[in-house]
Length: 227
Image (tube, rainbow, N blue to C red; front, side):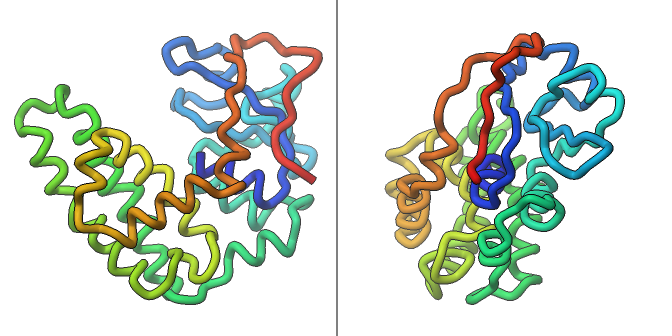
């Protein structure tokens, strides 16, 4: 979701294809051996996105692939030659937290909290501890976000920006594991921030369901993003 939000906000149009990870098309694995999503494929001859999966065999052979969602976000804001400059620059504006604090939060989210989220979400696969243990392990990060949001409505300051988009999808997943339990936590700022983010026009715009892509290069592909 965060890659989609960055592409949409910064005006990076691309062909989008929905991949079911249990049925990964070989064309996807040809461009990203990791076998995870998202995958952004860029033609070698220019820096414009042609899809989150390749749209031709020639594109596969002569392409640059970005297969980390945070890197796709950075590409959308900084490297995409056709980006909406004002929108991209606005997303990089820092008001409340410092650059180092933002980077630290995103790093902790991506490497520490994501692991805690997975164990909390799939606690049956990690029977060494009860689910409540994994909730307790995640609480310090949630409380850190709560503290950061006590100074401004968003991590990016007065507006929903890059750090909010980078972290919100993970907090959304966490909240959906046990909504009643999440809403009962003493995290009012974080809960309000999540609710506003999920109700935002940007988030809603990237949540439209897309038919599963089976690997066929369709003649009428779905174009994602706005100009």
